[in-house]
Length: 629
Ligand code: ADP
Ligand code: ZN
Image 1 (spheres, rainbow, N blue to C red):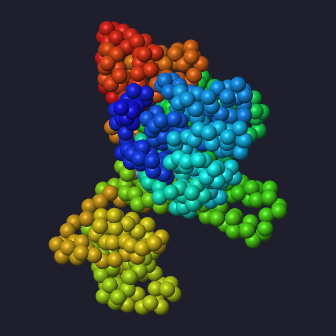
Image 2: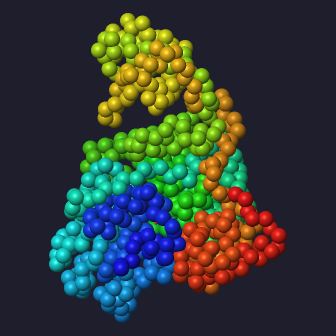
Image 3: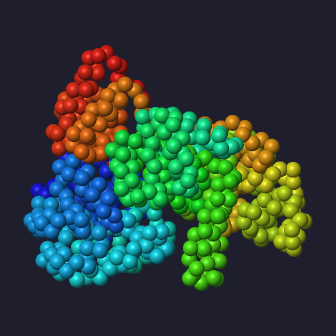
């Protein structure tokens, strides 16, 4: 019987089960259906086409935009004992022929190529003669002009597929796609009735925090403290400008940290060197502009610090999201100062001055949109509400108002009895309903606070009995309680991007039974000047997630580094941190027990399992207690 996906997962990748998001995708692919999968970084997209590729007859063609990304995946697959190859312009003709020959004979199961390759006559002829069993398209958002990395070569994929004697199933993957981009992917890649997997953007293992150091000196100290807190772990520090990169990198180096730098002002050779130093864990901290990161698949990044505020939340989330790809707890901290906003505005303007040919009206509208995005980013940097909620809300997701472990939730939320306020708000919605009026949140807040603007007066809302009954309470507070009521289902919000708020069955029960409303609410924001520098936010880890540290973990890491350097591969390709942690917990003694550790497949167990078992045995005999994490 042919290999089944579950078996392939265990044998080659060392995992026992698919994650829920992966399961549906893999079933659909195995059933020959097209797929659109939007899954956040670290969700495990590659497994979704790699395991079917191992089970299907023939080979799978993987289209991916970046050579570095492809090379990284091919190298990682080979470590797991999977035959894979990458066709790129840098490889020798002999190597390319060899790869094609092996794919034609099902020896090579995954053939990676950039979409440009589809224009190559020889390659087209090959695919005509040997059509792939499956076509996987990575970074599928590149096909859309609404996406942020549009690549015209992606548009040529669908016509290419039409030239094949049989059209293989097509699976498209991306980590970022708004609604418009998703529609473009389906249309432009001509997906046929695709199975759609739209996972949440949430990354539960990332802890978000914002710190607002009061001056340059304090910012440096905050940065240093964060780097020290993560001593021995890898991290990225993003800066807004090249100059800042140089200064921050020099500063960290002076402080004795192993830091590298990366920005567009360096030569290609310098950039390549820096990148390698970081990827191979020789330099633990990378200080970089946003030029760094695309195509870096490094899974063991434990923290991403933004030394300056980026231009928008898309950019921020993408950069911060490079932390914790291995699923381990990771910190994402923004060090905000109001000056960052001025620099950001300058950068936005400078971006447009570089394009004198742009139509002035279009330029104005693009600039307005960029400034609007910056406003949202600044809101994130200054809000007292849940940061995770803020991000997910931005991407159009309905997330809880309180995540419980971001920088704001842990320090800014207090549990309060808001019964009286809740009653007032719900009564207001009730009174509105009596007049057959249904309005949005801001109008409700305005009525309760007794606003005197034209809209309120013209509608006669000032004659409601609930008008101005919360005049003494801040807008922020009223809005927070209102949001909490909606989240608790005590009021109902419905319809479009500007939902209206309605009285519902639960509202009535709440009022009638005189229920209490106890809820975690964000504290009032600090007034901008008076209380500045009131002490920094604590950064905390997601509860229940293991942290790095511990003697055995260090020893395993040392061994991993040793093996990586012998083999000339990055350390995380030997085993990732999650796997080393699992070893500390399970303390395997035999090869069988080792195979039970998530991330240990048969080939890796064979290649270097004995050495890891040896370190664990030595540690146990040395009397070290198993690491409790
Ligand atoms: P993405 O491409 O979506 O960013 P990756 O394919 O790099 O994610 O996977 C992220 C991490 O999750 C990798 O370390 C991978 O080995 C691990 N992983 C993937 N699938 C599983 C699974 N079913 N069980 C456990 N770990 C998994
Ligand atoms: Zn939170």
